[in-house]
Image 1 (cartoon, rainbow, N blue to C red):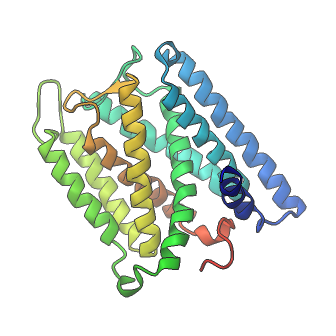
Image 2 (cartoon, rainbow, N blue to C red):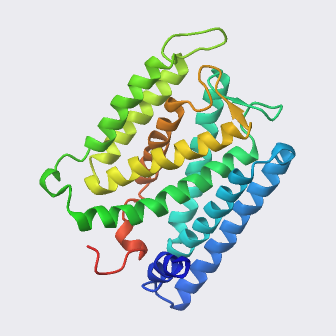
Length: 280
């Protein structure tokens, strides 16, 4: 079973890729960049002191994410890979600083602000979400479950935004509390939602749904294992803030939307050669 999963997940995903000299050079550059991301993860993890109370499941999950990252690096155009890394880092810087400044999120590293580990963590998360969304989109298209509603492109994000607003209110993030200023947070997430809706309106519903599902699952999982390990906590929530799990689809749409605005379409998953040709 393990060998079959390795075959389907790696060999089938890469065998369609070209091996011309420019493609080989592209892969080498991307793999070096991914190595720098991995190095940044390791250095940041040490600098933040998380190794002192490390969680085996968190470290194992991070290791698997890095493997997925190298697979994605081998498939993507260098300009797309660089754009994904840079935009992810910049968006992560703004979002995390805004949330920690508003006292919605507390990092238990003695700094409680954006650090190297947070920035490269965002980069890695966005790479993994992109890679898994490619696979999920192909499977969804093969099933044809959205064939009758192809025009409803913004439906997946609209549903997420409705649930997001519900938990934003019921978990207490809508009402200002001691040390909590929600004005900047509201403006930020409103802008992210608007950008996400624009991006969604220009891409297939299957792709949009895949980003939403993958963002929620991966974001929620990461938030949970990090909270359990004691790396961060939620002053207005418990072990897992559902609101923060739901921010990851918006985070993803923001990164993809900004890349799209500068002429880089990360939603063109067919061009990355991930899926076998029988899937259309």
